[in-house]
Image 1 (cartoon, rainbow, N blue to C red):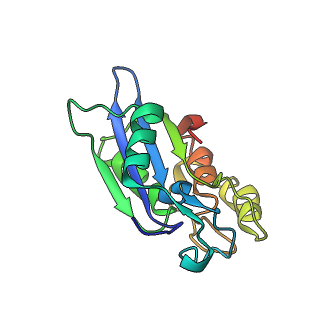
Image 2 (tube, rainbow, N blue to C red; image 1 turned 60 degrees about the horizontal axis):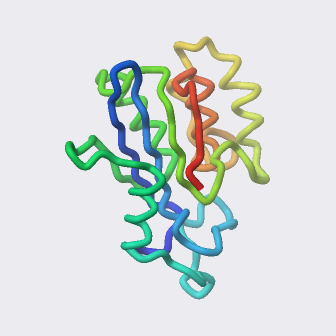
Length: 168
């Protein structure tokens, strides 16, 4: 497993009344958490003091996230965490996911817009000003749009998420 803060996986599991998305950013398993600019894709190896083993990751997922072993669940791997928004939008259009859905977020970062940029300003003044049916095609940009540090806010602005929890 590479020491990266940008590698992410998303999986969905279906229950009788709603869908749940398990949203994992592998940076959760790297110490210290990456705090550099968004356009930098990984924590330099020289700064990484701990990288969880495959057994540690598997144990965490089994004990804290409880994935089902009896049937494989759909998933998607991507490099930029903002792509979770695009995957969820596609799954909603394909009827693989229903809205609203629950998100279990495993990440070293909140992905709710923290940081020194104008991305929250874009969400508050532009995205939320759009009619709900127009919000699923946001502008993606590191400094003034939807990105890997705020994509959860974009999904919330679309009213896709009804429950967000962390497994950190």
